[in-house]
Structure formats: C-alpha cells, structure tokens
Length: 142
Image (tube, rainbow, N blue to C red):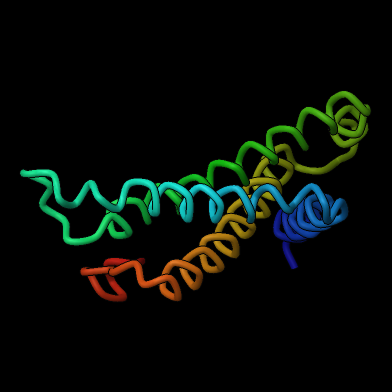
C-alpha cells in the first residue's frame, strides 16, 4: 500500500481515538444541539402564526440550525485538539518524522469529517423522531 495512504489512515485512526478518549468531553457535542433544538422549537412554535411566515412548522425552520450547531461543535473541539497537540509537543514530534505533511493534515481532516458525519446522522435520527419535516426527501437531507 502507498505510504501516503498508510500514514493518512494511521493519523485518521489516531484522530478518532483522540477525540473519543474523553467520553465526557463528547457529551456537549451531542447534548447542546438537542437541548437548543428542544428549547427553541418549543419557545418559538408560535412564530408560525406571524403573518408572512411561510413555514407550517418551526421545527422545519430550526432543524438545519441544530444540524449546523452539531457540526460546528465538532469542528471547534477538533481545533482544541490541535491546540493541545501543539502545546504538548506532539505536533513537533510528528513533524520531525518522515510522515508526509499532507497526510498529517488529511488524517486530521478525515477524522473530523467522520465525527461530523456520525454526529449529523445521530441528529438526523433525533430530528426525524421529533417530527421535523424534510420536504426535499432523502436527496434534500443529503
């Protein structure tokens, strides 16, 4: 196998393990979007009665906000992981290895993307279970 692909894969696995080790640190990524979705959708449900509001449900209006919040929280935590890697000296040690610089970045980006996809899938299941309508069907959701 190509060394670039091997390095990327190994750094991808390391990124996933790094993000999943502190289980308690992952809770805000899951709980905050759900909490704000429940609170805001309940608080602003009467907004659909405002003249000119075209939607029939505030859930449909707020569901994309909950999805984006989940993704942004994942990205923010990844930024903190990178800062920790730099502060702990891990990034310096990684840069003196013969690993490709692109593999270092791509491995971290892929692990972040994978985490964001898993979190988005969990949020989508939650949103569907709460009755948030998705008018575009499966293609619209993707």
